[in-house]
Length: 90
Image 1 (tube, rainbow, N blue to C red):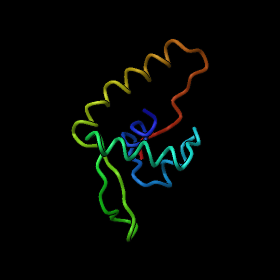
Image 2: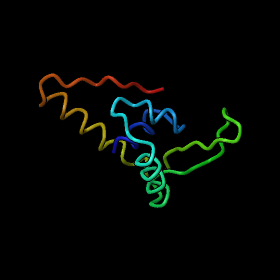
Image 3: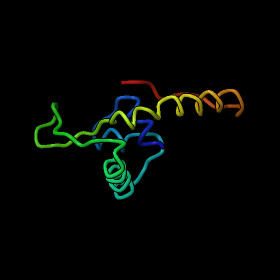
């Protein structure tokens, strides 16, 4: 769900995902991205800003998870003291 969250927030490059506060390891991140692509939640495409690099974006199926993430965020902010929404859309 964290990689999906990052995709919803506009992150698209491997290094951007690695910079997330949760500090996911490279091998796990690679696996998660591969599984998201295999399951039709994300797609890989040539990066328009980094020649020779791939980028990722949510498919329509993946975008359909946005309301779920918003609900989880809202629930956490309302029910878990000290919870903060620190990440912002790029």
